[in-house]
Length: 184
Image (cartoon, rainbow, N blue to C red; front, side, top):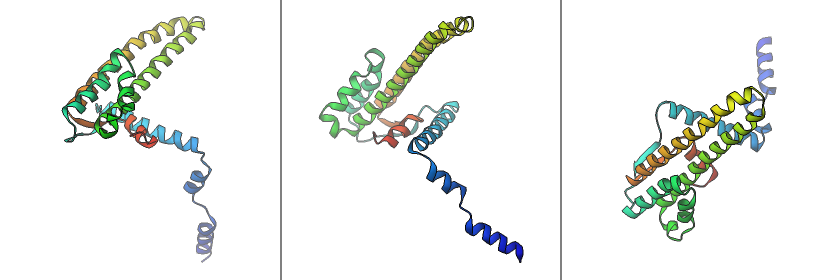
């Protein structure tokens, strides 16, 4: 009988750990946890060879919509950011959800690859200053920049082709982030 009193007393006065953790987390910590989960899910998908999720043909997409979606991705290779921004600020895109969806995704993907290239470039310049180790590692990092650029080109052309086929798809990690922010 003493055990039941102790158990009921312990459970009655105890606060579940999960609730305490949720209450004390700041919005930044919640956002970081969400980003960490999305990055993990994206990494798992890419390891499996999945470059897109939820791919479905949008029957409402006209040939013009599909062409604009293709150009939103493919033009990033030559003139980054211009075509998706034009699509997003044009009046006709308010009535064309297919165009808008792919313009937002291509803009975010270009920003992601640009930020990655910038970080590699700045990182290699910073490492160049460090004696011996920097002189060995910095050239290797500088070699990664063209690889990141080539990955970006391949991704943009692949996603552009898929958009031209009339598919509305989710890029692992990126699309879920865009949806959480309310941009899609």
